[in-house]
Image (cartoon, rainbow, N blue to C red; front, side, top):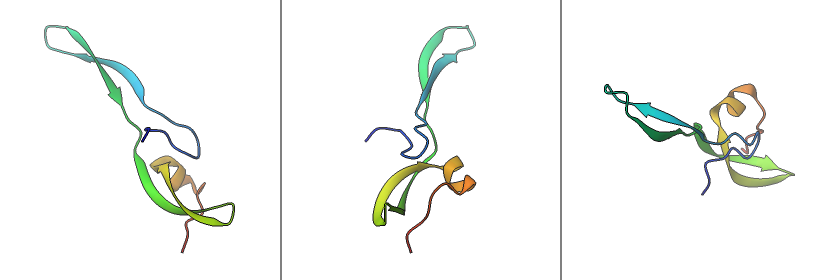
Length: 63
């Protein structure tokens, strides 16, 4: 399962952890994905959606 929102395509961002001695190691920030039952083309389906898409109302939840 990839860490990508199925609505907006938001994925992980990469950067560095910086220690006290200023040594840098790689890290990643994953999007806040939620598994949601939603209507996709009239079919109820489980999709991975980021919380910002849920908050913005871009997803029609299945009842």
